[in-house]
Image 1 (cartoon, rainbow, N blue to C red):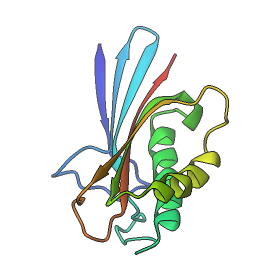
Image 2: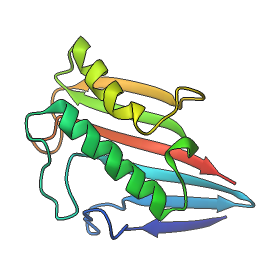
Image 3: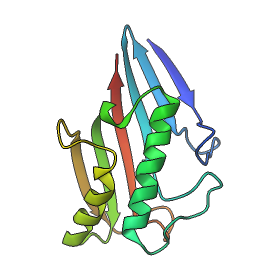
Length: 135
């Protein structure tokens, strides 16, 4: 079994705090663990402050870039965990709109969406982590 710790160049990175992407290769199978993605650009600036839809679009873009760094694509995701600050019923629809761009409606990943009181920054409205498998 081989582990790789990846800090993708296309994403903001915080190497003294956490690794953005960790892969575990066992035989022909690679499992990819992606740290929670928030609405920040490559320079670490918040995107879509106060706008859940805009933040969701950035989060899924970041998720795609994280997958790309490990040789995977959104369709390789098998599990998503989504954390939404002060979640309301309509928030699921806004997040679902952003997800549609990245996932076909066939074979959607297992998914959990949880309302939380806050995230690491008060500017973040959601955070999404993922597990993908290829091989």
